Length: 306
Length: 305
Ligand SMILES: Nc1nc2c(ncn2[C@@H]2O[C@H](COP(=O)(O)OP(=O)(O)OP(=O)(O)O)[C@@H](O)[C@H]2O)c(=O)[nH]1
Ligand SMILES: Nc1nc2c(ncn2[C@@H]2O[C@H](COP(=O)(O)OP(=O)(O)OP(=O)(O)O)[C@@H](O)[C@H]2O)c(=O)[nH]1
Ligand SMILES: [Mg+2]
Ligand SMILES: [Mg+2]
Image 1 (tube, rainbow over the protein chains, first blue to last red):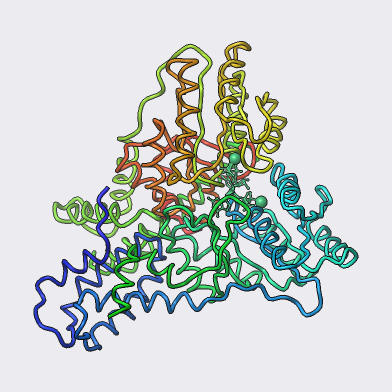
Image 2 (cartoon, rainbow over the protein chains, first blue to last red):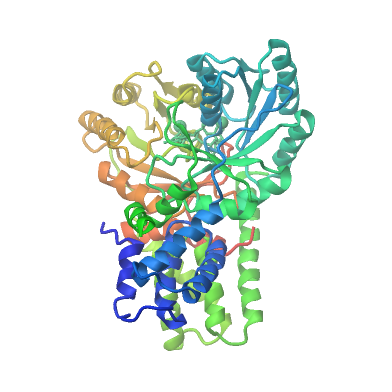
């Protein structure tokens, strides 16, 4: 498969262009089409793409092209800046409560990586000297409790379970237990659910009301396509998210969903899941994500030097 | 509600939404103009159909307008639905050639797409069709993956062939095929660990499982199903390509179609890779699996959920 990067394509569209100075609307028309295609192919939501392209267009035809840049590089620079801006600054921290325990709740669609991420997060915080307690509040998926217990054993971190009891009850008892055991972090693993499943979304709302988590984190698969906005919007409206964790970034997904989710929730992407192992959780870097979505890391570093 | 009623109710809604959506478009536009076509393009893009395939479909529409197959916005619904269905159907292969049991089905895919759940549903489907089914827990890697399959085994009264966690998955597959032969099972379904298509060592492991099965029964695996999550965007194309490079895929299972994602990427896959969709998953329950119907799927692409 020949992969022509956006950079190559832009170089092509600007080939006929001789002069420098400001670019005209007709100068950039084809280039913007390529930008639009590249973003859509990277799974950025089409509405987000529309807004972005409008913004990029405005800047591209308004600005003087730098002496040191070709028109193609000029446009790429603007695209990159807009993408990085949209994704926000780095903020890969968990807000630690002044009065322990800090309660973290992980939510998301089925199979996104919540349970694995619960283990990874617990591991990360333990290494920072915290004393986490993981909570098995997924009472629906076959062997979900066992899965968390196995992770707990591997990490030597306690897991609170109450069998197939009511998840709201489980969460509440777990926080009480954490206080008694002097565990300063509580990580609640919830069952995967669809954002349109009212009953299960209400269950999450009840857990929230009952244990008042300090962090409600949406776990999202980096391979998610156009529907990421609907998912993120629903979870955010129902629960008020505090951040996002993007999983499975160790593959070759371009991860345009990151942009879409950021655009609709305004919440920071705090961590990136980089593998199945329990140490594969990294801080999220918006700038790296921008070049990943555009599929052109090298080009960007060249332009940044210009 | 029984399976059939549930299916019917779901499709009723789908059909209605499809009509509504196109009707909205039609009412909004007396004639087909660029803006109308842009809206139509947006419907396809937002269903994850992807740029290439959307462009192809839009070209067909423009041609349809030119050669008077489409004369008003009214003609668009049947036209587009027909095009999409054809795209999906022409690539459908016939039924698998009859052979001596056991029929071996290998199930593969990236992490968390719904492999194990689909196997539970398939076991139940074949069980109810009067077949003797065995399932093999060849995901020996993920925490409690074996326990998960065992729960499904209990639910569907299906025997689970398993080894200890961490053991060689190819050995589990070998044992399962042996057991299926010895016990005269009709069907054996092999669960594998989720793996990203980009990890060459894990793809090698898959090839080994495949080899071991083929050594036991020459034509096996008779089916190798790639499970795709309908929520997945354009990456699904890479998944289909690279899994297909490692093992000979015979079809796709598209899961999680009960959400709001449309899974339009399978059109692109069908189009580019000649890989038919065989089953769709519409929930987490044992009966939430059904054979793929191109027409219904084409209609559902336009549904407003
Ligand atoms: N490659 C890769 N796999 C991951 C990552 N995070 C999770 N997984 C895998 O994704 C699959 C699903 O992970 P789980 O943690 O069970 O997902 P979940 O959201 O808890 O799933 P449900 O509880 O069923 O909704 C497993 O196979 C994990 O090993 C990641 O960052 N990279
Ligand atoms: N809503 C919905 N959820 C599904 C469907 N199929 C599977 N799931 C859920 O998706 C999650 C992951 O399913 P699994 O069967 O464990 O996926 P897997 O591919 O075996 O995952 P790994 O073995 O970890 O790679 C579970 O929570 C399932 O209940 C479906 O059709 N619809
Ligand atoms: Mg889980
Ligand atoms: Mg599995």
